Length: 283
Image (cartoon, rainbow, N blue to C red):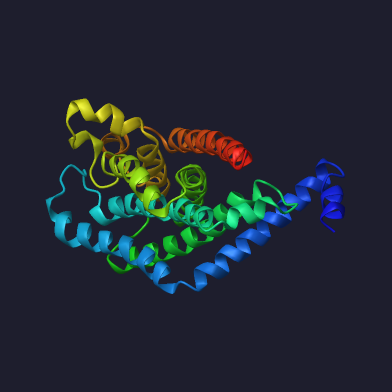
């Protein structure tokens, strides 16, 4: 039976692609069912961004300066949204490392299935989880005063954030396939994600940071994606002075193209590395 399946999958590039998509769907379904059996994990993933929203909205919000007349909660929510998808994407690495540790991935390798489906299904399932978290975050934002100027821009910003999260998930997947321990995934990713998130435009304008930090904070991928989402949400309501301070003077099209370039680059590089790493397992 395995031989027959393998032969049918190797019947052509079109057939191989169909089987790869089916394998990915099967893995994603398995991962979603497994997640539903762990409701505490879902709850914890949702509580963290809500705490950040309330903390920055009501504790630190009054002390934030340099917003040039922009309502701080409107400035804050896009930053929290990117932070949310960044940290939520970490589930990909944790789950893969756990599967590796328990020998589940080794069992999958003995089956006639697409090699990319293992982490592809994981990323697919976690993208759905990210979308749910983003919806909860936006609902909380509206409850505390978030009022986007452009609802079409808000939808486009959400799509942009989810695509970025998918690309970042591949980076987490590579770490999960490499370290083989859920605890080690957290230790390996936190020193990378934490500075990228906080040394960005997520919570304060880059213009308020020290000169030596502004260059990095402006051009690193997290800031670029945040500014693109923020610009889409602000629409044409931001004045030239506000765009200069909050977005570095860049227009929406430029920011979106930059964020897509970062997203594509991250996805291609880590996607290839994940496939190569998975193929090398067990050699």
